[in-house]
Amino acid sequence: MKIAYFTPVSPQRTGIADYSEREVLPYSSRYANIDVFIDERIKPSNEVLVSNFPIHSYTEYSKMRNEYDIALYHMGNSEYHEFIYKCLIDYPGITVLHDIYLHGFLWCCSLSRGDREHYLKEFEYCHGSEGLEIAKRAMESGVYPEFEYPLIKRIVDNSLGIVCHSNFGLMKALECDSAAIVSKINHPLRIPEEIKIIDRIDVEDLKMKLGIDETKLVITSFGFVSAHKRYPILFSAFKSFLKDYPNSILLLVGDDLLGIDRLVSDLGIGKSIKKTGYVPFNRIIEYLAVSDFCVNLRYPTAGETSGSVLRIMAAGKPVIVSNIGWFSEIPDSCCLKVEVDSYEEEILLEYMKLLASDAHLRRTLGTNAKDYVIKEHDPETIARQYYMFIRDVLNGNEIIINSISEKLFQLGIGDKDEDIIRKISERAHELF
Image 1 (spheres, rainbow, N blue to C red):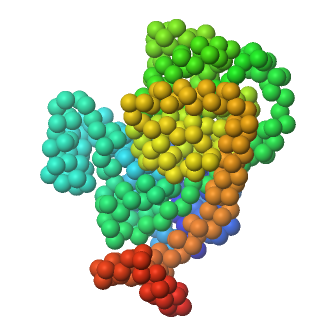
Image 2: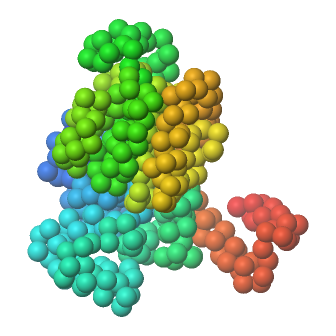
Image 3: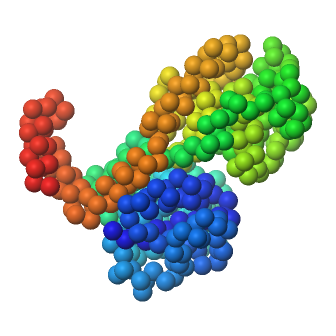
């Protein structure tokens, strides 16, 4: 099998570049010959990628496409994916939907360039006449529905198969087309040796190196500091938390896209907050090592799976998340979940106090989380699942399965008719 693999790459600052270079390509290359297609304006900086994979500009694919069995498109919610979108529309393949709500991508490719027509047409295609009116009102008001409308219907309609990393994403894709060929494949995570041995790190020495008082309780939030990460809620809860745990520090590891200095100053908690800005992967491990627990809230969500949260869990660190989207699918034994409602701040504060006061609970949640990631997000297993899904799409097996499922549904056969479903499944398996 030969695959044309479309993805952003380093030095583009997107988690999907890291995902492809670290988590997918090294393992999927054991099952298929893979050529990587990238934005022609980018010079790849990952030497391992350059040394091990043929790399082409996406503009070459039109004349090369007959050399490949299929194209695999990694689609996300930023301008980095415009070249991918263009190709998947022209040359359908299998699309991996890393984000389900793509308003940010659409805005970058339309309104940011003054192209109002494209913005209107895409809303109309994806959500009909209602979508068209929504787009018109958004342009008039300047208030855009970033996380309310998926805007993936054209992608679903122009894909031979869809991969999502959550049941949440899977259901949104099926809402666009109930007959779409879809598969949920977990987000893979290669756990580096540095994380596997993180418990052996001398935390006191590392705190000194990072300029953190060794006696401090360390709470950390990883990733871009942006509006949908609920930082106003976190800061307000942290201010209350400091009354009981004054010897604490909140680390913000990632670029500040929100501009939080004024908010932090107004709350009077500036001395207890440390911003690191963007840090490379090896430094992320350092901040993971000194963390007592982490908080990574998110609302609204674009339907993404958080690589940051998976790394936190893989490091055996307890984490508090928002109970939405993919995050709600994490087992309750592996994290603490906060509902996004009127009690959000109060519950967050109580969870922070609970973790601060109970070292046994921190260890238990961390151990459960680590075991879960090792079992369910193993990149070797997931590479095999990718291969099987691609093979089934190429062979038509997934199309047949979906047709059978649709007919059974039309006949009124559901989960309660277990014996009938088992016999049909066995017969279908024999035929394949």
